[in-house]
Image (cartoon, rainbow, N blue to C red; front, side, top):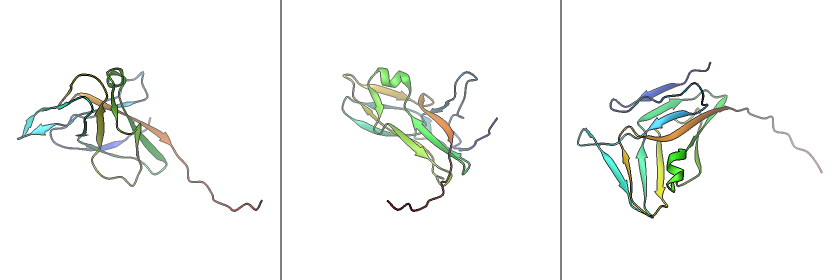
Amino acid sequence: MQIIDFFIKNTAKLPTRSSDNVTTQLYAHIIKHKESSVEMILPGASIKIDLGVAPRIASAYIGLLFNTAAQKALSVNFVENFGIITAEDRDFLSANITNNGTGPYTIFHSQHIANLVIVPSFIPTIQRTNI
């Protein structure tokens, strides 16, 4: 089993993983005036949601950050299909989310808002080939 260390803001929820799923679940970190809060996204609008965690991924791996199935079903999507995290990334994660649905969408503090999958990577040897 591989271990990933996360730096976590004091009020953020620790990522979780179920034994029957390859994804790590990440949660919204919405704090206003030192209290748990919510964000509402109106139809056609976008918002950046803090996830409150910063993973430390080993150099032989990359992380793929993507939307949840529940949000997709409501036409609430990441602005980009997925985010890429490497060993060089040290910032806390966030998700840019847009509401393509017909009604407002509310995101609550500690709501499952993103998934993270870690996949092996390699650095290829580069060589020139003459045609």
